[in-house]
Length: 157
Image (cartoon, rainbow, N blue to C red; front, side):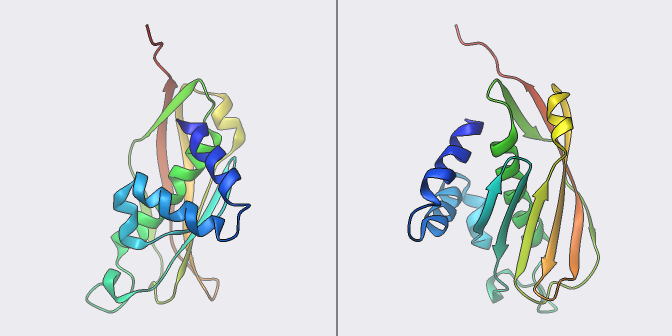
């Protein structure tokens, strides 16, 4: 399935409103991501970015984007990187989420995920996907790593 998502993105992104359409489809496939309404901006091997809006629905008690909502956006970006980069004969599964909260999330955010191509060549094993969320003024509010475990796809008999 990994390449299917990336192939779909490449086909749909070219269309008028294609990135918005892809964003909706991505949220249907992984419904939890719909809570932050991600808008996919770019996907390519080893890199993905999407934006999440600063909406009251995902605010915390101090009126900023809730930390878990930010992590949801980061995980959505990570999934796009994994889908675009994982070799066709392998599969991936996130092992965890390690993040540092650096500043208040007071604006819309750009969620970025990226990997080192050499890590994918060394699979099966772990690939660390670096993630960060950036405010519109350029301040990084959250950064971290999402380790994914990459294994061979089982053979079907």
